[in-house]
Image (cartoon, rainbow, N blue to C red; front, side, top):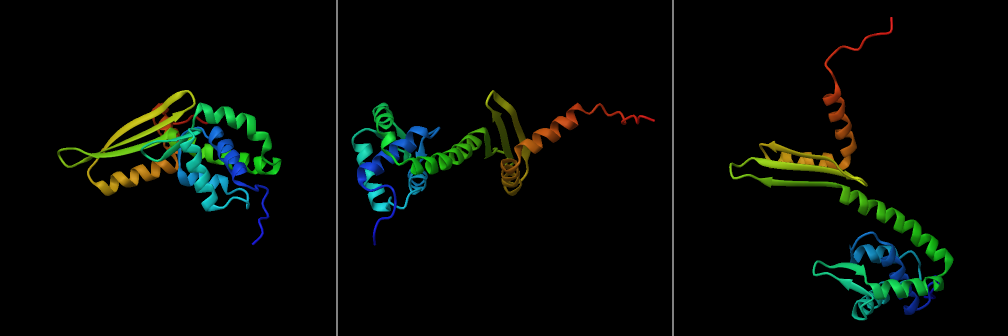
Length: 182
């Protein structure tokens, strides 16, 4: 079948991978880079895999023991030089996908939960919410059962701002009934 994408060869796939890696806000696993690179039908899975491996081998990218990829200074320099070689429409699509990916990564780093069992059998759930300025909320709760702990962490991850807002309302309520303007 004929290649109908704008990306035509492995060199352009490498340029695309470097373009992507240079704009990610944190190291990511293989599948995230793959998903972002598939923004053009000219990128095939096997060519992508080979190009990614080559970029790690040539030290344009590094791969941690945990399988997270990040761009190196060498890769950053070469990305800046070569990015104009990528078709404009590919860069636009890639930028849109990168913006969404970076929002998810930022959100994931700002909303954190953990759950650990204490020696007495109960669980401690820790819920944390950060913003660009630092910590907004850091709450530890004791719960008697593991299923309750998991439910708390899942619900917090879905709507941490709601919990923060409700806690602020409760804590700032002076307990006095509201006076009507009559």
